[in-house]
Length: 181
Image (tube, rainbow, N blue to C red):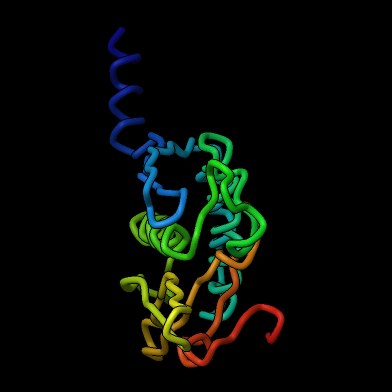
């Protein structure tokens, strides 16, 4: 019996628990849901960050990790119905606009940061661009720890579960989109 309690204590002490986040959807974060990521799912994401040699390779892993987190969230919420942009999923439960994506991606990035996976970047607050009066767009933002350069992590362009686009902040503010990379 003592061994069971000891093992339980060790598991709790080592953080052998799942993580949960609140995500949002249905445009403008009008619907919210709590998603729980299992240790198996977190291990799958964490593996992307093992022995990365540079900030550039970390950004590639971040892009892939966002796709995984979206897939895991879509298994628990209607966000699996989200399609890239705002046109292809209008009216569908689970649709996400750029505000929803910026919120959720920032939450996923903060989870990565809390788990110690981000060695070369720190998470910043989401950022907005407005190239035209009625064309606001929001996205998650990270900053290089050494360079100070800021990058955008934007999953809005793609269907649920696809890797996110990563741009320099300057390129994104100038209207960059994945077809132009």
